[in-house]
Image (cartoon, rainbow, N blue to C red; front, side, top):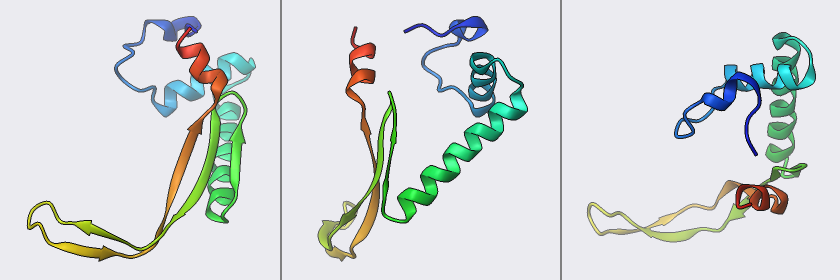
Amino acid sequence: MQRQGRYKEQDMSKPMTKTQLVAAIAEAMGSDKKTAGAALDAIAEVVVREVTAGGAVTLPGLGKVACKARPERQVRNPATGETITKAADKQVKFAIAKSLKDSVNA
């Protein structure tokens, strides 16, 4: 899938910045950048709130953001070779949607 408008010339080795993303969303929505920026910020806020609470959020066409608990485990300090116990923690995971994988590999 190719980017539309002036963004298709962007170097693909560099990630799109928030400013560029907001401009592309505004163009796709046919609205102004302020509205698009507010929409992007609202989506990010909802995702953070849900994942922090232990839930998951599915972003249609992109994937699923979820928080997984990791148990206490043994890890090795590569500098000293010492084995230490790392406390249990949580890790945010993003599972890519099949439709996105298929479109990238098409």
